[in-house]
Picture 1 (cartoon, rainbow, N blue to C red):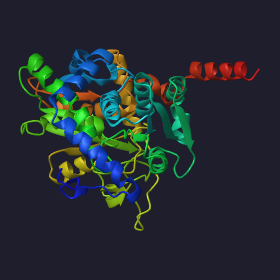
Picture 2 (cartoon, rainbow, N blue to C red; picture 1 turned 90 degrees about the vertical axis):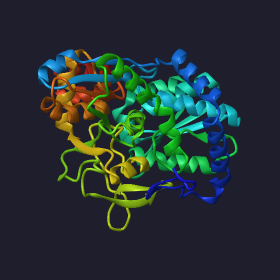
Picture 3 (cartoon, one colour; picture 1 turned 120 degrees about the vertical axis):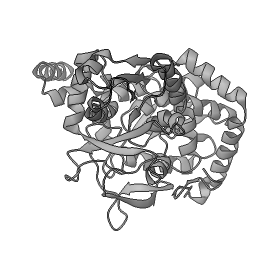
Picture 4 (cartoon, rainbow, N blue to C red; picture 1 turned 30 degrees about the vertical axis):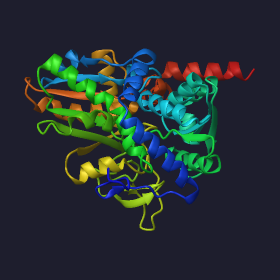
Length: 409
């Protein structure tokens, strides 16, 4: 990142004047923390005692036998406290908030995992918390909304636009502009104005640091390929960052193919011609937008991946051909989820299942002497309503109807 917050042609900080001083304060505090080994040690200690770091690297023996190619290892971010990689970033920003003396935090969320993690952090650190979530995502991720509220957070349903993640981000920024004195915006992914992309990636980099050490222990050398799903890009940057200088390791980001690349109902930014450069929500990256710069509607079975933009760091790595990007359709994702559950007894989040789908296409072409890592960024229990609907499960439908009748009495 250069001094203006750019990664090559991407990034920056396109912010209103009212937020300038707030961002200066944030950048200065972040810079101090980066230079302070005690801060990183405090962070690691917190994550090892409050969360589940280091998370395991699981050898997927049954899936490996099923495909007959490279050994498949799964980085288990689903075993983090709150069920996803989101805790890594949120707890790190919580330590920053303590240093800055802020008393209130706000956040956006799509799949609900970032909102859940932020509400958890706020409860632990004694902070007031407000979460913005699109109406469509509230419907898809109701269990997470329930727990956010029980943790003490105020969840505000956003009914504007597509009623998904991008609209939640817009509302969170509006809140921040009017409450800069006491509020910190806990941005959830490696997007937004600088220093958020770099800062979020730094906290998430613990994933790749652990994975590299673990694969050397279990496999004896680096993997041939590393796969991660890509919405905004925080889990991908978290595992990719450590491997960027390993020239023999190919990094693959898997985006939300929705109903297909030609359907217009997807969230493919870097692996299709539909996205173009633009500036929105405080930074420059590749966006799904029309010729007038208006953001397109997106779709994914995974609430956390249907974002119109992508991390400016990933845009830079894509432009430099350091990361290859693919996509997986909703149908492919459900199939990958089904296979993983039945072969390994592991239930990935629908977001993470995109990475599994991308890996499953290619792993059989590799030698049994090779190894790959799939980053399982979250667990699938949050997706129970969506997954049950995708399976058209009759017993689940009967259960929901019966419970609805009971509540209506």
